[in-house]
Image (cartoon, rainbow, N blue to C red; front, side):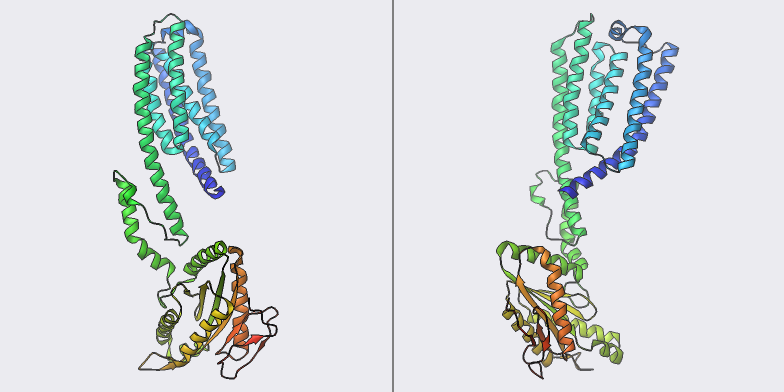
Length: 428
């Protein structure tokens, strides 16, 4: 949640920074045009403003308002540039300043019968506010617009202009209904866009488990089309991002994602998981003797062999050149050892790259299994599996070693038909 809030604040900051330039330019142009028209006598003050403020002070107050608005915009720009974040307070303050300027100009220049112009200008600003700052800011601006419109009419009534309150409320009702309807429609669009963004962010991390719910879109539109396109590509993207193209197993990125899921599931269910670290013995000789093309064919067949001997729920991954790992959910030490021994035996019986050059290959496997208290056990499991794998390689390769505390591998069988165990083996 904190990460998501930080992303929103950063995005808001970027929006405020580029919008401040437009705000300052618009304020400057509006001010210059107003001064020019006032000088030419084309633009007359509102009679209500003349009676309430006085014609001599109106021009001064217009200048003061413009200066204050520009100062506020520059202050917000400075704060955002320094912090590179902007929470809802700053965006709301900017929206409030825009709304104040709009109705101030309407009060100064429009007759009471023309105050609806303020609603029109606010309507445009309202939609931009919703697009860039969200539904909460838009609804707040909608309420503030209604209050400002009623306040203008109340001031007009207090200074001698008759106000047709019936027409005022009808106008405000039409504006409110239209603005609220459009806000709700845009909110639906924004929520679905946020859903797509969330799906894409997960995909960026290698998680393609979530699809876009096309059926939930009662009125299909462009967003629905994007969702359909993603759903069509999801399986292909998952394969490209998470699968090692040579072996057909998960790559390191895909394995990390699957491991996090399985550990989270095991932590909730209070079950064990096992991890097998697998290394092809003397694989460098295959490349040196037969070339890398043959080596690639061996890797492809190794991936096929490992997947064939693993169980349905096991996660098989190629994590390096000749390094593989198997994550076995809900598996004890003894179950993991049986799986490892089955794989070792399968390699002994297998001849790779037939009919030629017929390569014999063995593997060394380090095994670890443990209860899962939380997902944070991942690094510890990997470290222990690697330690057991190195012990298997040091003790002659072509064998399985179970990890134990203070690992000291002792060879129990010359042919590797039995596992290598440490003194004081812990059965997990």
